[in-house]
Image 1: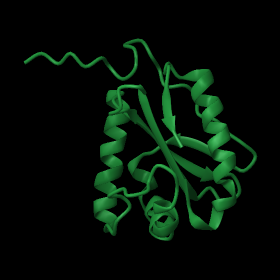
Image 2 (image 1 turned 180 degrees about the vertical axis):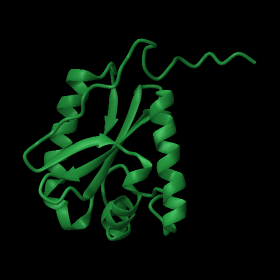
Image 3 (image 1 turned 120 degrees about the horizontal axis):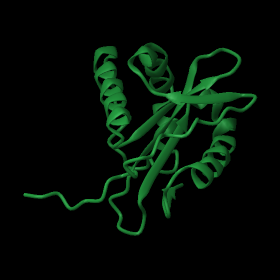
Image 4 (image 1 turned 90 degrees about the horizontal axis):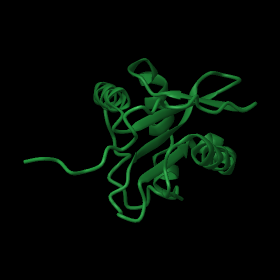
Length: 150
């Protein structure tokens, strides 16, 4: 059977440099972020589940460090294959992981990308800042016509 699904991004597309602010920066999520990523989201499960885009989500749920590593490895593979782009959000002061951004194809025909992000509960004041930075970056640097974000 032939897959007639259009590619998520054009064949010649290169993921743009992610944004940096005075408070945080984004970089592709990779396995080496495992411990800091795991600590960030496990300390903030209730906050993440209350974040727009995660209501009623199956994630986050308790996972071991090894299971989290498998998840990060999967996301890194998606990035390499350009079928989804996941970024870790790092604090400029501590360099710790303080959140995550997911850019994946939308299952809704009226959008070509579904974007979700979270910051850990201890950094919840950064949520609106991150949303504004990501929205501007998506509009300026990504090839999407319609994005489902927040």
